[in-house]
Length: 446
Ligand code: 5AD
Ligand code: SF4
Image (tube, rainbow, N blue to C red; front, side):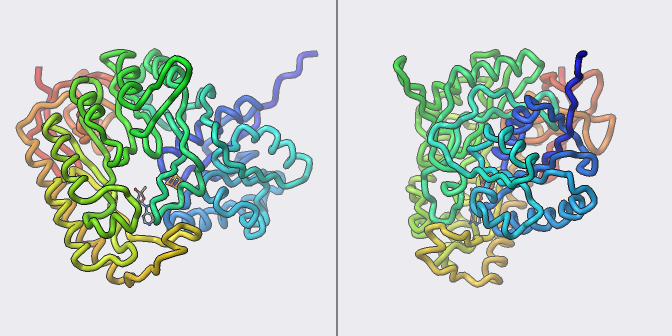
């Protein structure tokens, strides 16, 4: 008699960065191999996984709040398996099970291959924990299931971990040592996505520009990898995130400048505009060095789109340091920024060695000033695009109106324009005639 395999239902919820979204897709693939299908409703699930983030205290608080709701589901359905994945699992380890007794499974970012065994352990009535970090794991040959993307634009993880030891950051503790993935497997994944109709790939990693692969055939650095992926097709756009300023080499800048399908957009987290604060953060560059890199980028890629991350109120930050951050933002003219208040993370170098000495109200006020300046600059930068024509990769129908499409230009700016006969996946030349601080508004041109 043929027994049909029973499909069980998996519900994964993801917090934190794009790396976590990518990891959830790897987990989805591992779970699919043991008969679990992704399900959108936690109420119907046999297994619920929460993929967590530890970057700031409020990221952990959001997860804790969600866990209270999941606990209620488990009460209704005691056969439900609940697992905590990702950075909070790695940071808190067994403490998380002591704190959240209803949780069955704790698994860190490098241990997802162990999930089939861990699920068996839980099925036999025990708790399962694996938070081992690895120096090799890149999940290189696992083909991620793709959920939730638009079928046009996808992410490929090219490296894992981080060992820059920025003093504020929990990531080296939660994601372990830096390691790069075999470039051939990356190109194969990019080609497979292109064959399925995807038109844009974002190469992902904590520090993509320190990508380094070595074997008997030689070395592949990040510029070489970019060229290999760009060679899949001139119709495949290539993006990357995140870059560390220390590794923005001239070779990388020239590689971007010389390839039409490598996007003219760089996310280059500066964190602070004060050399004294940068030193305390262990960022390995000064304000002057960063500004010189920006000048070189602009010289070779004059229409470049730039974005950044900024932390307000790091240990010892004075009013003058803060003013230096504002003036650096003005000099660079970022198109976009992710802006945060400093949040002390347990066990980090800053938590161990420095006092968190900027009062919360001062941090908040500085952050507000940074946000206000960025909003003005985003609008200014968008206004400067009015009248220009851009090649837009259409991603979707506009959320605001069925009559419009939305897509991005090479500089990563969202552009909305009338639909006509175009469809997602098309490249369309669009002339911009208006804007807000967040979006360019245009019309297609022949
Ligand atoms: N507090 C506030 N922001 C932080 N980031 C990283 N660690 C902290 C922290 N402890 C920010 C940095 C980083 C981004 C992903 O999160 O700006 O680039
Ligand atoms: Fe991503 Fe960092 Fe959050 Fe981990 S802690 S999920 S690496 S943002």
